[in-house]
Image (cartoon, rainbow, N blue to C red; front, side, top):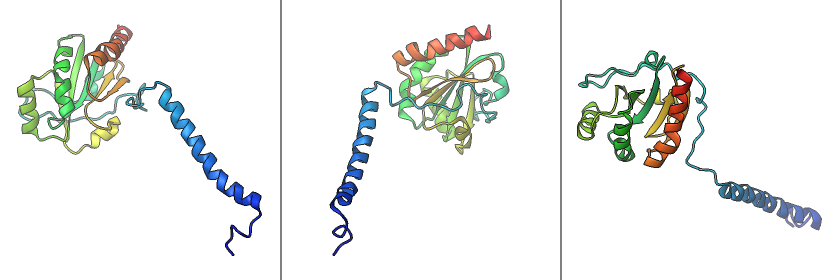
Amino acid sequence: MSAAEGQPPRRRLLILLVPLFAFLALSAVFFIELLSGKDSSVVPSALIGQPAPQTELPPLEGLALPGLNPGDFAGKVSVVNVWGSWCMPCRQEHPLLMELAKDDRIRLVGFNYKDQPENARRFLGELGNPFDAVGVDQSGRSAIEWGVYGVPETFLVGPDGKIRYKHVGPFTPASLKNEMMPEIEKALSAGS
């Protein structure tokens, strides 16, 4: 005689129904989230509103630009773009960064992630260099401090040195116009 056969019928029914109810409850939660209209590609950042990590990165060798220095954020609105030459979405968004670089009110900083220097220089040589500074994170440890999940990712650092916005994935014309630019305008008005 099995253990289930020796139990009263009510208890057996309860043992069968509990997993079913748990499954239905989880299914309902997933279904509600699916229909909520939330953008599942948006990954919240615990760094929003916090000071930018005090990470110094060396400059990209062979490029006559400084590396990443958190002291340079003070008093300026900075856009920090995490990229790699091996990253296809980075290549796709690059023309938009070239356009963004024309805005003299902001400082565009490149955060080169797990890349070979010669490949990074070739990437910028082919597509143009929108950056005012390029810091190199060869090991990927600094990216962890910034809360980077993958590339490309872009952070907006206000003139107070705090992270104000994070964009995960490549920019599109719509995301640059409708998401990033309004955040840049807010940061610029807060700094004046």
